[in-house]
Length: 272
Image 1: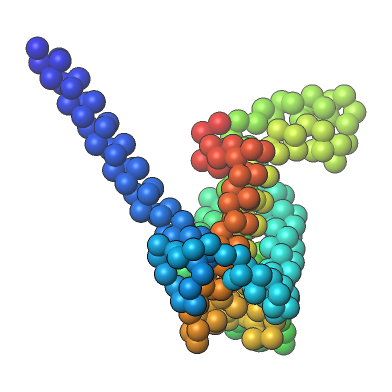
Image 2 (image 1 turned 90 degrees about the vertical axis):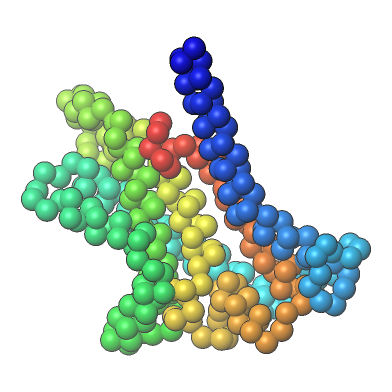
């Protein structure tokens, strides 16, 4: 009898935990759907539930060259910083995983530290360094800052992929006469590719939505789309800003969808 009550108690606990998890998920996702819904309203002001249905705010947003330029700038930043993060992060992860030198754990934590630092601190730090090097508030300064914030994602997911990697495969390839580069391209890279893709897609998302780092390292004339939205809402709040925000949400959804289809979200946690 006691075992029955214990089982019922366990099931009740699991059910309560599941309900809590779903409630938190709905709480986090609901504002996104509110923004998307508002972007279709026919009123001249933000209204939820939306009144009618129109694409006028999207047309107005896309007809503004400054917004199009900001989107293109954000795309250049996202893809440029992700490419640099890939070129730096994958070798770093390989070195961190295989090195036996003293202090390697400290170095690994240093690479991952931007994950726990407030992004605004990173933005200020990049501004100070680029000012000392005489290229402040420029595309290069923003690019450097974005590399800093996305590099930990690439290093982390690559390290997770390397956890289950059999080093004897590389040794076999080298014994058969393959060079180090050929071994990496044909043995190592195919095995850790899921982790690399996951890190790069997460890097794209983080770069695309970043405000804190970009706002300290840009000027009004050349602002990424999140910074332009941030500046716009300080002086005007209308459904067009909801359309712009919804556009960035659509792009983030596409990135996450690609991440799940190409890799699987579980790869990021290192569970597989």
